[in-house]
Amino acid sequence: MLNLITRFVRDYGSRDAEVRADLRLASQIPGVISIEELKPRQMSRVAGVVSATTRSCVGDNPRLTVTVSDGTGEVQAQFLGRREISGIKPGALVVLEGRFCEHEGELRAHNPVYELIQTRDDHE
Image (cartoon, rainbow, N blue to C red; front, side, top):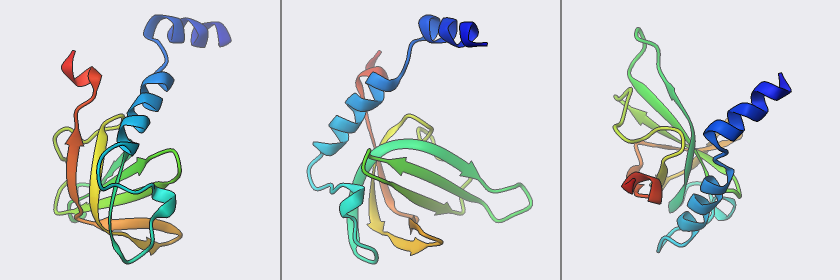
């Protein structure tokens, strides 16, 4: 099994260095604060890398939950009425602006303004 993982990383590479570069880029975007500095119930602007997306089931009301991390913490953005947003997928660099509130121990914003940020990989 370890040999298989070693071959996989060798053949397809590790994204660790790319993610670190994206996080450095996110921290340099004007007007953003780190997630660890985020205060609940205040309008805030954060940037980070999408680490997970979750869609609601077909029978439920449409909802897309996006988890974003900047290396200091994680927030969730919940987009009501949508199951998909073009370009928002794990690994994408995104800026979120909205009012983040605590919900079950996590910071979450409903329908925040979002901006996709191009990285070096997007140009290739």
